[in-house]
Length: 309
Image (cartoon, rainbow, N blue to C red; front, side, top):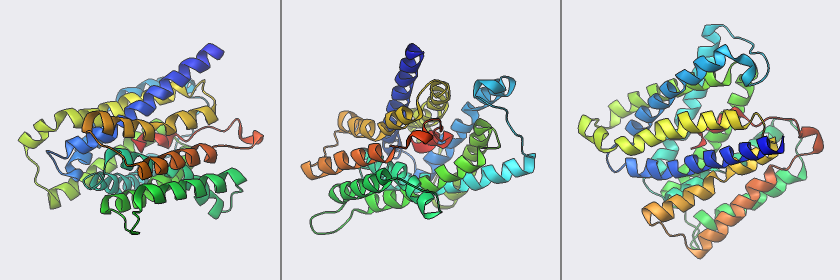
């Protein structure tokens, strides 16, 4: 059992690394195409890449665990459409924000959803422990050091990423509710398709799409669509069969660290000492926010984390 848990932790670490480096791919891709075009093609590929996984699990329903309570098709499409709309908002803000900020900073700010989710649940009436408050306050202080300058100004890109973090958090909560009575993989496939649809509409309205530009951006788009969604999502589903929920949450939150490493290695992004302190505090806040009481041990991590990268 320990060997299975160790193997699962390794897969989750690889997942976090894929998602972290996706921020680099997203930033590079926009050297050739607009942010909405990038997301449109990326999520279309992501949706298509989940088709084999959906077909496989539809024949092996017990692999994920538990029986799938099926919604009528219309209800499932409506839920997937709503989740896709919120995902479109979060992904668009993230992608446009990357035009004006670094991959490393975007990764850490996006990771705030890990802290925001329990805070939202608390506002909605769910009890939260002291760890939620400590994590949220620590992350907030870290965000101040990372994004607020000594002149009390904030970069436009960081501001967009902060707003986006709230949409990511809302998306996590939506998927957490919807996936209780429907196949999370099918739900993700539908929401990715809707996100791509909304992105295509926006891209045709405000951007110029050419075959040449798509060809130039092929590598980062393929990475963002197939690796970040298809491969990483599959690894997450497989790994969480044997991983401890708390360990899974911590390992997946390393996504922000890998985003900073990827930005440094591949884009020569350098964080100031002030920013590094902010990143460290934010990451500590993310870890603390995952501490739960003993009765929450058997809870499962939300499947919606797939879209964080």
